[in-house]
Image 1: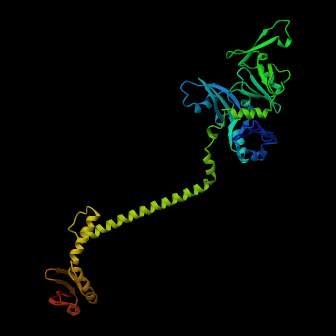
Image 2 (image 1 turned 180 degrees about the horizontal axis):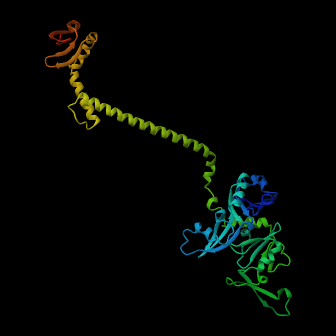
Image 3 (image 1 turned 90 degrees about the horizontal axis):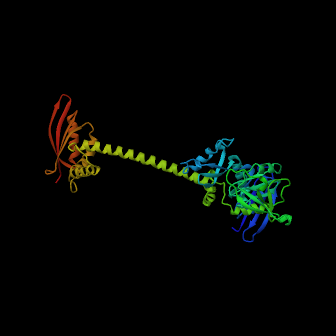
Length: 432
């Protein structure tokens, strides 16, 4: 994208919000303006469409500081950082977002801002339909000089950048007091010129670093400013070419490597944005899938239980029918033995085997229910079937004989009556 939108957020919702669209290709401002409050961010939705959005947060809401890293804490630095600052902060560290800006040896440069403010800013931007790519303290978007501070006034407040990771937002009333309190990282050595030289050239300044901790005369601090310098404030104020402050900040945000969107605010991959509208559908589909899988598992479990019941019943019947087989090593063995026994009983041809005989006997036996069959003996070699039966009357045997005579050659055996029970045998042969 050759164009991007920069929005300077406000500390409070009712304060004005400045914005600017910059073109990298044309190197000029495409559009700019000011909103009355955060509630009007939706008016910038058109400018945010198809453009990256950089959000600047007020330096007055951010603490830019540094902390010494204890030995051995490097690997867990992100976790340890908030607690290293605990003694310096008046708030609970769990309520603060701590972002590592830079690490130099055993020193960590950090930015600290309240979670509730970050969340409110991001919520306001999201409601306006904007996806923020960067969240940067506004003071760190001013031009950076190694030999001086950088300053610009915006909305009756002074933004001052001290270094790569340090800066403040100061009210004009206490800007001088703040400068007097600094142990500045830069100073100017003053060399007296010839007494007869022009007064403007009588002083030359060579900017040099100051040793850490060394007190500095605020009057010797070099401050490059892009808006008119304040009156009566100490320091060496050097005017730079005047620029639109929001333009300066937009260019600085574009070049800056600082981005407070870390930790819980870390940018998500772009594909997640497109999947978000389908999240509810995916959840519903997932629930349906889980229900189907659960139902399938229950069905499988029921079928397994049913299969075990069938197996137990088949083994029970097998042992009842073929008691000579004590061991059943597998279901295939059971099936094979049952089929073998059925083949033996059924015979190898038409009319052979026991089963065809029993099928022919059944109609006759059903007509004489008074007879109880006690024993059946089949001789395949002689093609003969012997029935041992019992009944209450002799005539029941005679009735059975007459019925069987239609299909078989019937030989009635001797009948014996013991008390009220008549027993006897009937021998059947197939008619020639």
